[in-house]
Image (cartoon, rainbow, N blue to C red; front, side, top):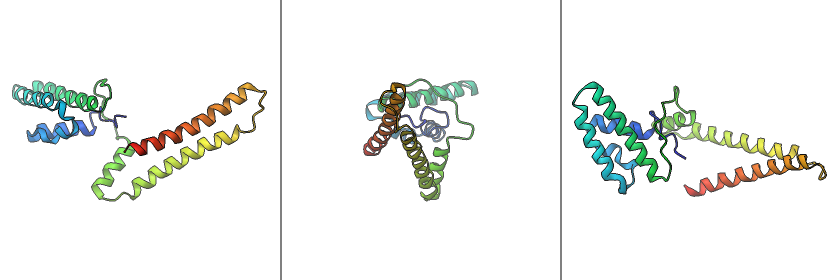
Length: 167
């Protein structure tokens, strides 16, 4: 999961922008594993030099630096880099809410949103299982629908728990 770190409005690019603005690599360096640190530092230094040439050169160099930072960030997390994605027009609601929670130092709205979304999803999957529970064992298509529903329900719960345990 990349958490939208491959987007132009993602945390890695925003941190890379700040690093360039402040001319301090330390704003983005924490997002890159130590073994890729030298490559990012080299890209940073080259970008600072090229930025001085012209506005067009600065724009191109900045984009290249953003790509490098995101690529190295994802590489460190074992995720393939497939290019920078455009910014979301209004941002992802969960990311906007998470950002607001950090700024306000208040988790209530974010937690209510997350818990409500999980509750709705679990209930919908559970209802789907119950609606298919009385299948005729001799009707293979209905039995398959039930099997798909229950595997979907159990798989979702298992994935949810595994994700929480990873953190």
